[in-house]
Image 1: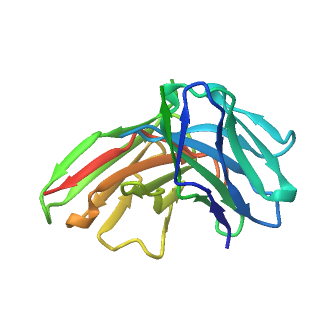
Image 2 (image 1 turned 90 degrees about the horizontal axis):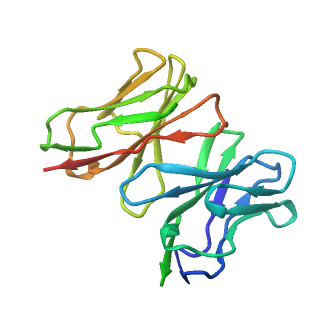
Length: 113
Length: 112
């Protein structure tokens, strides 16, 4: 079965520092990949997605992610963290066998001044 | 703006008292999903509708039911809420299966 691994349940960075949130998936067939952000007491908001084509995907709020098939990874980055980036981030992958979205366990990003 | 709307945002109910959460969408998407999310966890799929076809997850308790009277609306009914059902309930829609899911703001349910 398809699975998604997010390394690091908590990540802390200083304002202005690089943000790197890791996501690895298990699939021999390149799936659709997503990053969602969730602010406290809110729903999930789509940050970016990879379906086909260019492997570097740009999303909202200055985030981007790179699909690396050889590493089965889809890490999320942002060059310079803002205080407003503090939230929970979920990586998700589409599962062709079940037609469902499989979520990682989430990474809570804290940004310190 | 086209969107997914959930009402109410916060719902308080008593142990065993039926409660209904609602979701509406202006995206005209075929698929509507209900997820349960507990604190610091990923969303857990309860069921989804593809048009009028209902698809229940195997581990969704019988206590949870859903209705989709038309394309725009979908309801989550909890027949006899227990303390363990306190959670955030998220509605999502997608044009088709495996396509991007768009989430509503969620309804936080508190069971007293």
